[in-house]
Length: 457
Image 1 (cartoon, rainbow, N blue to C red):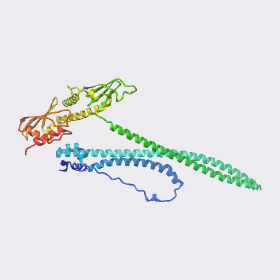
Image 2: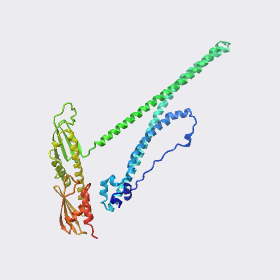
Image 3: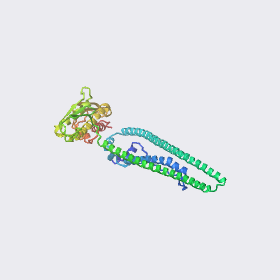
Image 4: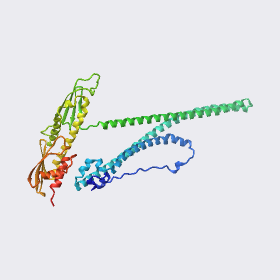
């Protein structure tokens, strides 16, 4: 009853169709108790922190930020389950409330198949993201290993130099010790001085090594900040480009030619061609895209082979060109390039509606037997539907007059009764209960079958 009245939520609609979509809550990780120790770090701990833990932490933080952003985006879709279905997708509600129980069960089964497929897809995506994360960790570990190896080599060179100095100092010390052993006491003070110089040299070498490490660490931190700033800038550029692509995404027309003299656009699977002829170019307009450039003519041409094309495609072509001819002179509606996008938008809307109408007619030609529809015939812009049902003892032909503004208005109709008592009065009562909108023709046929052609018992 809530579904028929339009007060059912999306989540309740899924429950009605027996489609269960569990939403997992995020699990937080906690540091082990051993990490809370406050013991001073050892040199080995500092080396692990600089070359192992900090690079890994940076990569994990970037991955966590990406996951947090993905979760925030998905929360919006999760909240949709608490909203009314009629507010989220009114056209779906209008179509589904006319379906039978068997159709609802079939639709639920299809949704469960889709849910199973997307669950597998999500697992594959999660696995691929783990592969990417581990690849980044491996690459970072290799880079840090190379840097540490390079620094070890430099330290080895410095140690070799220090050892050579110590060897020289030891030789001098041994020399003065020999002199002292031979009662040359005056040289004792010099020897002590050399020992002091040795200690001072070791202190200087140690200080130089610390300065070198600090400088390298500062350079690495600066480089890291610059790379993070560049990554953030690239993400912003990517986001702005994606917004532009979504804003200007038109799917009902394609540009096949654009030159200084003309532009050619195709509609409806290359079956309709629009040729726009430009006026003389404006000074300074290098690419010929100045909005004030004049348009000399707009010509529409049908490329459809009506002898080979199905009747539904011919009907769609006639309705589209009916709209085009009803607008009068297109050159007056589009005198300059400034008005061309609006013209393409208006034509795209009509093409989209008529294309859906053609799909509805093809559906009725293939599956009309489910609705006691014996024959579907097309004559110019009229569709003749021959219904017959032995259980209702009725056979009649319904003729609907179509136009380019379908499905935004009710359809004029005539009825020719052949068997039974079903006439225009009964058909009019049924059509008055069919709201205009998406799949208007299919819903008309479905309601006639449901109300007039079922077993009267």
